[in-house]
Image 1: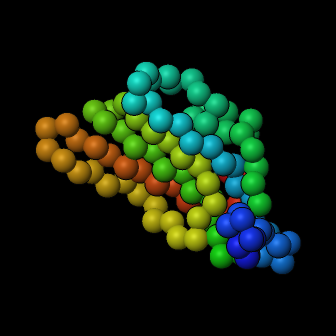
Image 2: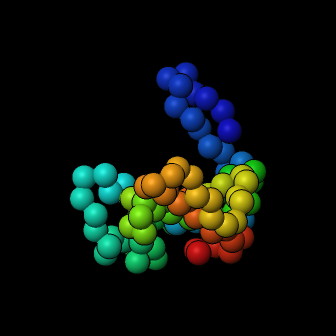
Image 3: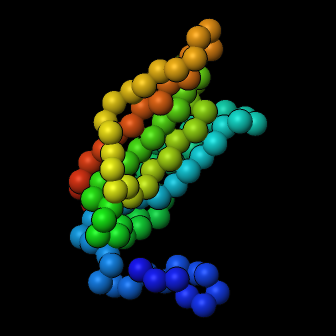
Length: 104
């Protein structure tokens, strides 16, 4: 991977690995929608080839009081499976899922 003269990142074929993951991100700060493509139809989101260093497909979902406030699917170099909670009163819960299977 190199930076071009205009600071654009140029990805060479030899930089790519064997894994491809769905890529999407949605944020529900203005209005919550439980039926978005990224949440319930990830197979309808772009399947992006990962870099060699990115050996996981990762899904990160952030919820407040049980409602999803954001979701992100992408390739990742590191992925820590599980949920973490923070804050008192209005608890924010971040849950991450990981796999090493193309198209998950």
